[in-house]
Image (cartoon, rainbow, N blue to C red):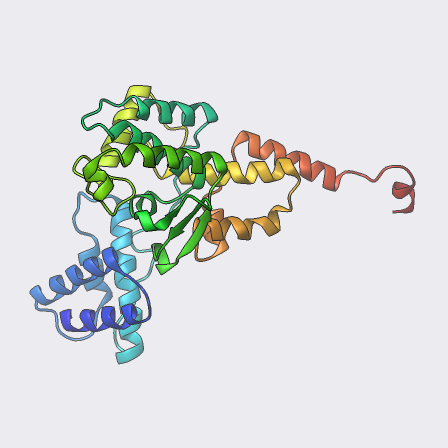
Length: 315
């Protein structure tokens, strides 16, 4: 099974799929199959036994494991005509949407200000985190995209970021608001006062001039949330960094509604800006917040309301 899994992964990656985490899990399944002395076509029972481990894992995680084997099983079934494709419903759903936390204007201000007051374990630390969180809030970038920025990717003369081959191997240009560009310029001035940071190729740097690691950013963000006393207004126990991306999408849609923009057309622009492979991925990020629902309702009432005067009589 390991040999077949490696051949499958090589084939899919040649088509442009990264398959980083899912590829690792698939190789774990293949190793499990070989160690259990399985021979012959892939069976639904084998897939289910592996996906159900460990017993302490969440139902969603086990369903995700099964979904990875299902894709592999479909490939094998097309080749040998004997492999079984397990039913997707055996372990429940793996893509339930959990309502995200949508940040208020006040919370975004509090986050940036609290980051700017972080203890300076190294001189640049408060400048780095306040700028990073401000950039995520104002552009909706994935945190991995922001942390992966090199100096050559940031054009402050034109106010444009170049995001290269991130999720789905997509690259794109991200125009910045003038206030965001100004904040980045201020960060660059502070950063370049530090020799190690000045010599680094990374845009956002840690204490020794190295790229800022995600694990450190996540733990710092959680400490700030605890200090601010935040609780999630969604279905998750606490706000996440990724919720800044959700909030950006909702705020952009609300602004378009308020400006009378044709959202059906504009949503494609938002999808491109966020780096989504298809527009349905963008709808995943939208949440029916009270301001958004109220504004959309008013527009619908205007659209569906009766015509006035002569127009009504001639309708």
